[in-house]
Length: 312
Image (tube, rainbow, N blue to C red; front, side, top):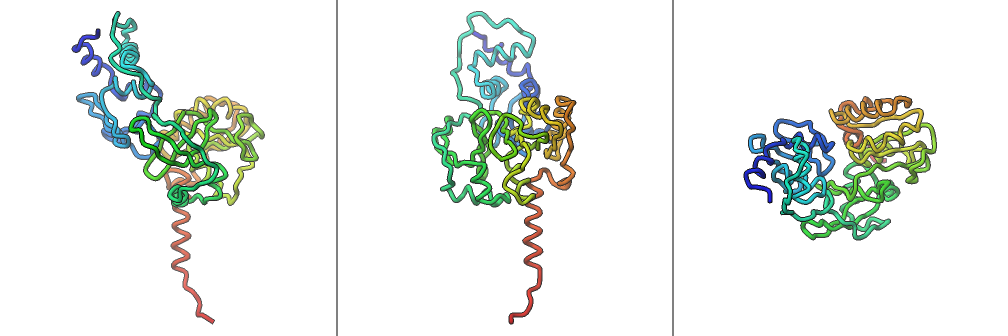
């Protein structure tokens, strides 16, 4: 069995940011606040105590040491997480006879889909989409109403689901971001989910609300080009082969450090593809969805301020 003093030493041996980096997650931060590895977010919500090497995710209420972090992110038992951390420390030989002090944990998000509906019966989800500039018709074309169970608390929730190529769903609702699997989504020029390219140009988006926002801004319900939605900047390597099968790519990525790194990784991974950075279109905003929301606010304000003529 692992000794208590050895366990305490291991908790401090690998800093939490190093764990995130080694596992392929974002490590940029604002002071002591890091971007949570448990969901996509534009504002960091994971706090880090460097002195004690502890973390706390304000979005999920989870927290703990680096062993607990590895267990949750990799779906490992206590033993497996310890062995992985030992490898990060260069201790490649595990302690013989180490007891399994933990239990298998749910997959990364701990979410289980129980029902998928083609129609949105939850008005709050439609209202949430409309608050982000996406109308109900467009939402219904590309998304589904997904009922899912949180395996951590046993409760059931409903969210907007965007299907990825592995059959999982990216889930969104007011105040929640999650997924039931990490994979990209590829759509052909007719708007159907299709892993095979259908034309020579592909549009690249980080999240599905950014893709839907592009459609709203263009006044169409179909891109008429291939589309890849990364569903997370961490999935860029999974999209590289698909993108490289196109001669041209238009990248509508976020105006932040992660978006810039993502663009660079695409260019390095797809040297034969001409990759155009389209983020200047919304340079004053973090992403294209915020740009859309800003445009709609201005339009409403202009309409409100326009003087009306006299009644006839």
